[in-house]
Length: 128
View (cartoon, helix red, strand yellow):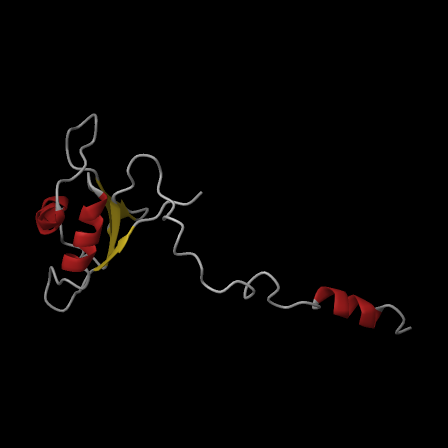
């Protein structure tokens, strides 16, 4: 009974890429989705394991003033760790001004805190 199968196939795979490719990239007018807290954050990866928070902050202070944690009054820096507490080599760092994000990326993307170990620095986007 080949009665309904061809029609079903057509319905399932009928319009490939219907929502994906219809619109050319006209996204530039929209501003990036940052949360209301200013959203001046960078995501750093490729950090050598032995690098401590102080060294990372020292490295990034060329880009501008860090946002301070309300409780600790220390710069807002989150270094990610695995379940065993070992550094995963990535971190999230918050600046006061959005311009600092651009500067941090410009000055520190590809920067080697250790010879032969370039870091990757990108603007951190929080989308929910």
